[in-house]
Image (tube, rainbow, N blue to C red; front, side, top):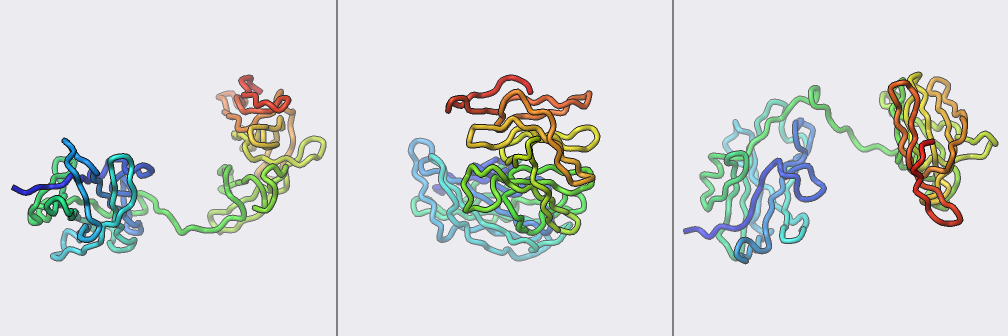
Length: 301
């Protein structure tokens, strides 16, 4: 009788940590997406049974359902977590077309078990020492239409780390980070917001927000919520870590201008701003410093 290993592959399982599933991405997969397949294994199985998977010889085999031949990809070590270890292989983007049905199975090589094949069974995985059953009952997924599911575009560069972002009524995206340049001190009290146009890809700076006394304000660590007329209310901001400013300012997307409004009762670093049914905004939490001590604000603005 074959001595099978401890491997598994359950496509929808959210593992390894940081992944939506062992078949990533999860949900609808479009033709332009790369698909990463993970296998799991245990250093020690039930009763202390060891499972020394070998990277050499461990493979993902895939094909279109209509094809006769299988294409192998090496399963490479990815990560370990506790008693679990994970291997992965990625089917490159563009390999298949919309409407294709993709099939795959896994071969897991060991030096302390027989070679183990993983295939689909009852929504999960089954193990076998025979490759023929694995090929007869492979895992499978269809290539969906990007017109239905959407699709990630290429990575592009922004002028700053977009820690805060808001989609404006005209479709532009307003963003800002912590500081304009990496060589500036962490607690610099200004950071220029900028606009990104998804249609053209163009980026442009807005004016620098200021308090009523014309002092520049850094909106990093602020809270924000839209008013019924489309203006964006931004509350709080950055003096130092855990030390927020009591400012409140309005951004008018139609004129690309900032206007200070009445200050809040306390400084707020990372407050929460929520638009209520009557159009007003409830501002809660956020921290400030009093005599050097961090105070976690519990009062509404």
